[in-house]
Length: 340
Image 1 (cartoon, helix red, strand yellow):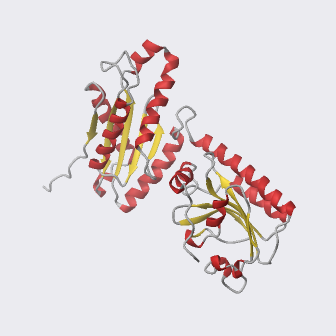
Image 2 (tube, rainbow, N blue to C red):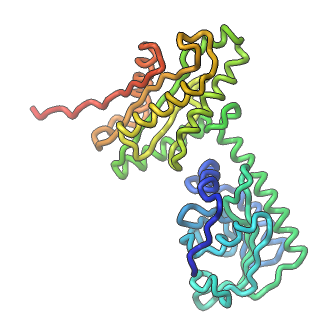
Image 3 (cartoon, rainbow, N blue to C red):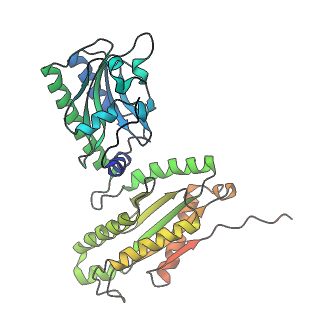
């Protein structure tokens, strides 16, 4: 197959896929409900909801076919997502030169017919497709097209509900429950591969004084604006930002050393400071943050467990706050004990 066509806003599209946790999560029975209804309503052999990652196409629900993933360069759905809300049809995959290397066109019982429609995430960019396939050469009827569109719309509503369940309603970053699940997964991955992992805890300075000046209702605005500044700095695909308390945020930075984590922490501190959010109750007359960080690098560092890493970042945060805030403190791992 030819090299797959490039989506114009691929970076933003992949961020939407990541935000919805569609690539690193368990199967969702709600998706199966949609494909089950689609397969029964249209009478085709195969109905699937697929998600396009950076390099692979993942089948989040597939009825009538046993597939988990395929290389993205072989995915017909690469062409489908370029059509925005239009349906892409292929009457005979095997006779279309664009898909001559498709795994669906090979074998003794190849798939012939394909019809797919982009599935848009809450940001209105396609995260994947809802598609029909069959081993017969078919033409999509008007009724089947309507059913495909209607069920794609239902799937998009499910994705919106999924996003709302994952995110903190005030700030838009992940909520505490989502953090616990994702951090456990990142910890186990880093432990298995012995890769560095850095955690930052971030808290606005002089929150009580801010509420004293503006009233308690303005505290939400402070938290929201600090979250926006954190997110403006952290644009890497694997970085995780979550609300960790009333005013506190946690940042998880996979494959990030202490030096790299300190660099990103400083960029966050500067972003909040330079946003010049008015704060008459602060000595600097603007909103600032204190940041505590901790990092695991060697296998020995991992032995204390994931909760110990967060506790170390919390201790560092309290030292940064005690020193007046608007600063970064890292808790350094204990050096290995010398042999007796």
